[in-house]
Length: 188
Image (cartoon, rainbow, N blue to C red):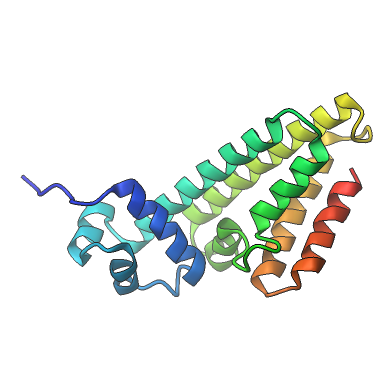
């Protein structure tokens, strides 16, 4: 009978998100994970099988949290535009950090060679786009946003998230990033 791990799996996954987000997949060695997560190498492999499996588990958690948080934020009562601006800034890190979006980073680094990362990316992007579409429809019903195709608007907002995330990761000026976000939201 195997030993039970003496650490909190959820806390390790949360911390792994931070390590992978900061370092990228290729830049994160198993030794760095052991040091940063405070677990033994044996625990890393016994509990998570591999660095790749830990990475995909961390990405799944990140995706679930992002979609839930965005849906809750955009579904809250009140005007839609400020919620969209805040959501885009949060998703991209614009003006807060230069890490961009973990999933955008993962997709640009690995999706061509890693089907599981590509699938997780598609799933997250579809969830974000759906939350944006629902918010745009709500804004159109209230008269706050111009009539139009809410799916096209949601796609444009998702494209803004992806583009601003890449620019943020590249160290673009936060004021310029926030201007891109404002422009995207103002055009709705």
